[in-house]
Amino acid sequence: MKKIKKIIGILLVLVLIVLTGAVIVFRNEIRSLASLKKIDDYGMYQMTYYGDYGLDELLQQGFSSDKELEDFIMDRLTHGIPVNVDVTGGGCTAFVYTDEKGDTIYGRNFDFAYSPSLQVYTYPQNAYASVSTVNLGFAGYGEDSLPDTVLNSFLTLAAPYLTFDGMNEKGVAISSLAVPEYDVGNQGKIMVNTSVIMRLVLDKAANVDEAIELMKQYDIYFSGEIPCHFLLADCSGKSVIIEYYDGGLQVVEPVQECQVATNFIAYHDLNIGEGYSEFDRYDMAMNTILKSNCNLSEQEAMELLAEVGVMDGETDKLQWSVVYNLSECSGQIFAHRKMENAVKFELK
Image 1 (cartoon, rainbow, N blue to C red):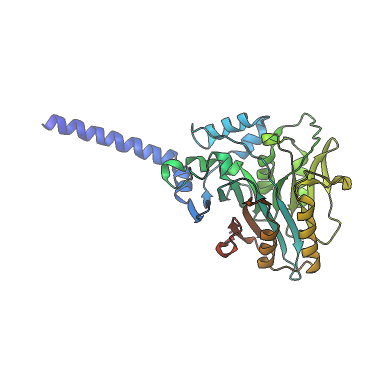
Image 2 (cartoon, one colour):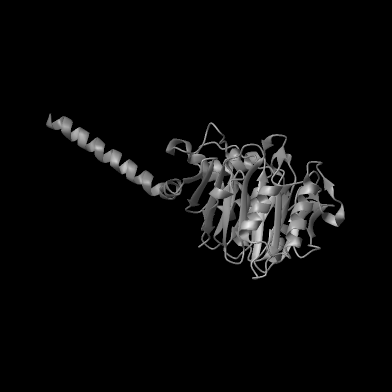
């Protein structure tokens, strides 16, 4: 009997050692998943990502396919759990203006099929803190499979590389919007994709000019073979649309006191659209902002986002809306046109 007790005691010690080692090795992952919380029953979550997600390593080696990015995420972030990365744009609307108080307000809709979302906070060493929105549908989640349990939450660890829009602590914001055409003219530089180029901007750019120079250092491919352009802005009020057209990266400056982006090529006033309400949404957003003399309140900006959200027949395509105050590094986010459930946030 004493021998059996001794063996059991040794086994318990070994189990404790293994568990202690696992907690030490995966402490950041455990902290990240422990911070995950639902903020809207439509399928909207918040999480703080703890630890290093290896951006510098990824940028150094680059990748030219979603499969290569999936392998990196599986090796570095999800520790062997497969993740299906398919980051695409949708029928989105984004705008930016500076109000009478001098605050730069950046609004963005994501219109798509049902998409649970995650607002993820990152605090990387030697880079800028940021808050960004992730479409969890492109990490494998859906209406019947949400990260509501510990066992079903591990794929949220891929969030830093599934960026769709975001703002960093310097007041720089960026979002992606689908467009029908592109001409990247890749020049043999290190290649990254749609979402990682936005992660690069959020982590490393202190203003629009720095963001443009960073983006120029990389070639790009578009995940899911869906070309996108980007609305980029900073707290000074400067904004541009970045498009990949006519052989490379093109910078489209605003022609009004505000700037609006939807789903058409704006470069050289080509206005090449998808034929899916993109010009109507552009006109509505631009006219509303200009009519207010660029002085919409955050609440009015939210109302505008809800108004221009895409309806496809009786199907509501608006998945989430977010308003970033780039001057105060704060904002509000809500799911599926439910402004009454808007959650305020602040990047600290």
